[in-house]
Image (cartoon, rainbow, N blue to C red; front, side):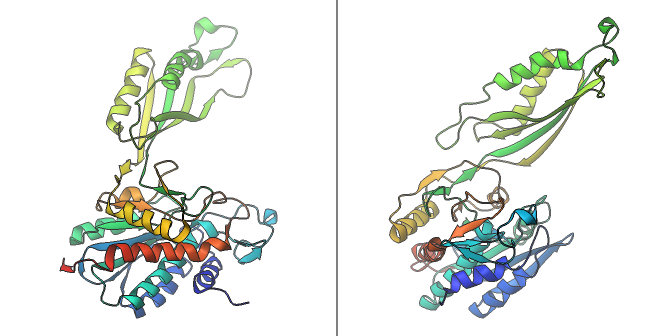
Length: 384
């Protein structure tokens, strides 16, 4: 049985065991396909991380496909029904690590470009690819580095479509037009260790911190807005004690995280946390990590083009959403006014037996191609 060009390329990419941050030759293979289409391909490396910037044309508007070639670790191999890097078909699904996140998207982007350029060799504007092998890891040497290089060179994006798996149930039912920010804190409440039988000679940090933690958990940080749910604060880890049942601990350590909307700022949230802790007269140390600012693309040309492509291909009326975790869109949004994420269903991502339904593979490619047609087939050519 013959398989489609997109499905064959997806299988080829899955077979490359590109566990973050090792690209395993994925970008080299994509470069081999993009260069004959007229893309100038540039490798941008940082601390062992491989990134690819490939651009066709010099005119505006510049449309960018963005994504990552790295995948998360497999987990226990014995729990997979088939080897994670041996693409396998069962019951109408393609199994393999990266099938949904996001090697099908990468294959669909490339084949969509092949078809679009063949049909519109003199299309308006320019097309580019921004690919990294450091999205599933620390994300310190990937997309953020490429965006910095582009900004320094004065290369301006107009539209960016990130191929993250955004669909919820069927292909096209959800696209992301923004993501919440992520702000983490490591909090240490200081006490005085002592014998549990002599509490007057000690100071229990668990008892002292409990009212403040209850207030933090109950606090309404904002009301969200048209696109975002209210900001949330959650504790992820908490530890105190020596392991003995007769010792009052000397300190309590807590890890927490804000997922915050554009209705709040990182500085404002930090100030409010400190005010609550100070109000309870706690002795503490608090270290902050801001891993991503929120971004939002209101409904406009890009979201309209993607939504129209989805409707034409699948008959599905898509929903704009800002739910989920962070993505590299947070870096791209700093230099690109319109960033949208769209890809296949995400129910199996990062799981054992990750998969995609084969029936979605070619429609995904067609939606990407239709998006290019909606934005560039009739685009007015201007020099950047």
